[in-house]
Length: 389
Image (cartoon, rainbow, N blue to C red; front, side, top):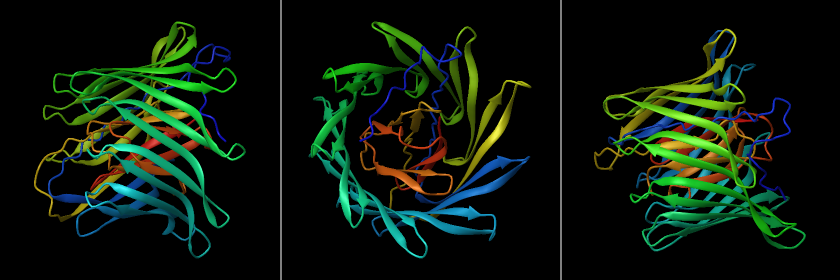
């Protein structure tokens, strides 16, 4: 089974440094009686925006998301084609009991992955078992177990992989959280399981600062390079407008001996209610020293729902990005019923499941290098571009 590898600094790299960035993409979308209907993704190619993918959502009478259909643009037929879909089975309170992902084959949908969740009496997610479709049956793939403190804050996230030979679960990685008094994470440490020594080994560490409104201002990523030594890895800085809506995020890499160098930034356009209607991600080009367009997402909303008219500043952040083996999804909400899916540029889904409360980690070490799209669903959809190095 795949093993969660280090995201840490490699002392043996030719440049003498490991370049990675934290992309804490904050998408603040206020709920104002509307649901996200579709998201159009475009890539910047030869000086113009070209279609890449599109997703459409379906909700039931209780306004719970029950299906997400992902379409990919086909340049030959000049049309949208089926790529992937996720069907959700919800509990009575709206949390997802199970999700099933399917990819489009020659002329029908084919099973790919299934995720099943359990919750405690307060609605906090306890376990997630992921299975993959092999032959004509579901087979164990991974397992996640979560522990909370007396205040209900997540303090431990254990990931395990299924060992087909030993026919049991094997430790893979764990996250240990240190929370602020208000429950926001102040820091978390990633450790990897060393089967040969039977012990946990430090790998990465992330430390947060917040502005006076309680929104993340900076995130420092560090890698464990030697006993007792943490090395700078990545740095993220967020900018907000006077309404508290995210307008820009800057992601930088640590470079020896230059220090922090630009990597990517994302600019956001919000409507008057704070919903993101478009965001543009740019890549830093050292020569000629300017920002170059990379990807654009456009959001559309539809229908008045039975939901009350309130503002819910749920904010999603993903880091590090680019990443080698692991990404972490953070939300300011403790709602554990938020579904996610990760798709490649063709629209093929490679991962799906539910968020583990405020912090969720995904193992992407087995994916090919390239661009992926992380979609998060909570009566609307947020899309975040992920770069796998």
